Length: 417
Image (cartoon, rainbow, N blue to C red; front, side, top):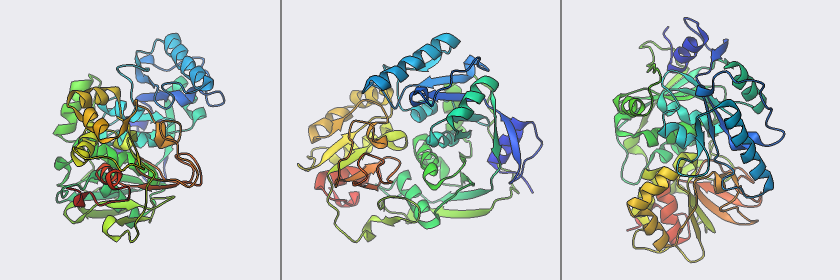
């Protein structure tokens, strides 16, 4: 039997002709991303050397701008590390800063056919660029920084064959919520996306699905490469690329077909997305909201902000609702400002924050208090994720969140004119 995308990339990175589920392999790491929370005391172990400064990227995203002295000290450590080892791919607070996975995608730091690691669990986002990208632990990151290698146990792959086309106001986030609700956990497995619908999905849509794969515990979440991807990559990097397709006879644990035509907006109920999502038409209760949030590594793209603006343009956020919007990067912020999107959001009553992990991770820019209810187009909804463990968090698409911010209740975006 042939190999899946993940198996082919990991075989190449380990110097093997082929790898199979159950194998444990040591792989060469092409790119190592270090983020600011990795420099916190207790997380950070100063390496005595680094394997290649040109293969290391440092991005400040969780702690900018610094909210306390400990955050400021972690950011200082990041700057010292960059200076000591001559790392040129550095994204500090300023024009080139952004949420790490957004920056990795926009700059094509995730190179097709290679391996990328970072301590953040949503590193699987890089799979949208045909890259085996995955989160690892802080101690293992130090080993990678020194040696340029790590190990993985090969898991089986589930193939998602995407067909049809998305109806209006149905998005990639809804596709993920459908998959999470129907199929549940993918622990110790890889996800692979392909099929005739792929050309209709832009890179941001693909990245939403790969990023959210962490919420069903997938190891890698890989997309087949196409000309759209390769045009973007070639414009951003001169590094060698190895666009990788599955073999025609690849051995999948299962192949599942998702017909995009049949989907509608979905909502994840509180605490988990695994077997806990429903079409919004079947929610069955009127849920009052205190806060709505659009942002994060999954849904802070320019397209997401455009969608939000299209829903709320000329309208007003419900008086009792806090509507917080966080662009995924400063580049997105500037482009949104140039297009008038930021003005549209502000005039409607939304609060637009700097580009950071912020509210999604319960760090700042929108922490929830006890008893509050939030609808978010971010990544996670377990208890305490966005603040108080007594708060309730529902997940939906940016379109659904925007519509809900207008009414003050979870609302189908197709019903807002």
